[in-house]
Amino acid sequence: MPGLGEEVAYLGLGGNIGDPRSAMAKVLRAIDADRMTDITNVSSLYSTPPWGKLDQPPFLNAVAEVRTQRSPKALLDLCLDTEIQLKRVRGERFGPRLIDIDVLLYGTRSVKELGLEIPHPRMFLRAFVLVPLAEIAPDLTIRNVRVASHLTGLDASGIEKLTGDGSWWKE
Image (tube, rainbow, N blue to C red):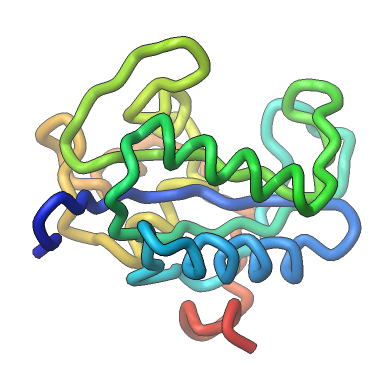
């Protein structure tokens, strides 16, 4: 259970150029070092086919559970600031990237404001998000449906688990 003033949130991480594994590990360590946010669980690392724009290298993806005292917007700002520190350049939509961090869920809240929508509006279309999320939170329900059930009907072919557990970011 979260402590007083804390919420459980889930972050989606991905990248497909440079060294995305290292970039994602740096992101998780930076977020964990934040005095208002702790990483509490991380999925295995997955290799996933590109989504949206197909003529690019495969991605590495993972999901992290955090406990945070930050507001949803402040958590997003922490993620975006961390991307900037790692020198992410925002190019074409769905295009190649060193790192991408999305706030997928924030407690049971629904948020819709400029630059932030929670639950993440496209997560239910993306097996590369739901597979690692289901790994670390199999009983989590979103919109009264278990996360694993949201995977039904999605194409999860080509998604390959690369690590045995979620400790890869601490190496």
